[in-house]
Picture 1 (spheres, rainbow, N blue to C red):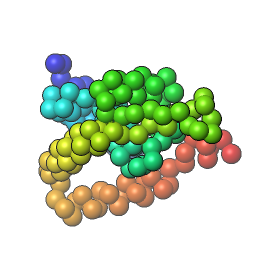
Picture 2 (picture 1 turned 135 degrees about the vertical axis):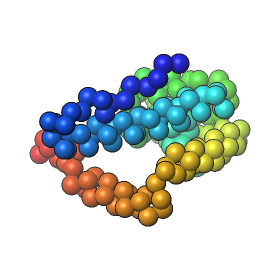
Picture 3 (picture 1 turned 180 degrees about the vertical axis):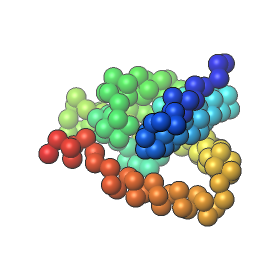
Picture 4 (picture 1 turned 60 degrees about the horizontal axis):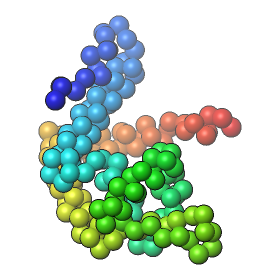
Length: 162
C-alpha cells in the first residue's frame, strides 16, 4: 500500500497561517480516517461507508428510509442503495417497503447486524482513543473546545446562499 499523501506538504511559510492550519487539520483527519479504514477492512472485512451506514441504523431502532440515510451520510441515493444491497446480502440489514409509500423502503439492522456492529463500534472507539493518545486529556478538551468555536463560527453552504 502506498503511503498516504500528507496534505500539509503543500503549505509554505509564506502562506497565510489560516491556510497552513487548514492543511494541518485536513492532514490529521486524513491520517486518522485512513488508519480506521484500513483497520475496519483488515479486522472486520468492511468498508468505512458500510460501517457509517450501520452506525446510522444502530441509532434508530425503527430503521431509516433510504432517502434519510442518503441525507445523513451526505451521499447519493445510488450510493446508499449499493451499500444496502451489500449489507442485505450479508444479512446485516433488512429492507422493508413502507406501508404509506410503496416506492419507499425502510432499512433496519438485523440482530446479526446489531451484533456485528457492536463489535466494530467497540474496536472503533478503541482505535480513536489510541490515535488521539498523543494529546493529553486536557489538550483533547482544549482542541474540542477550539474546534467547537470554529464550527459554530463557520457558515454552512445553505447559510451563505441566504
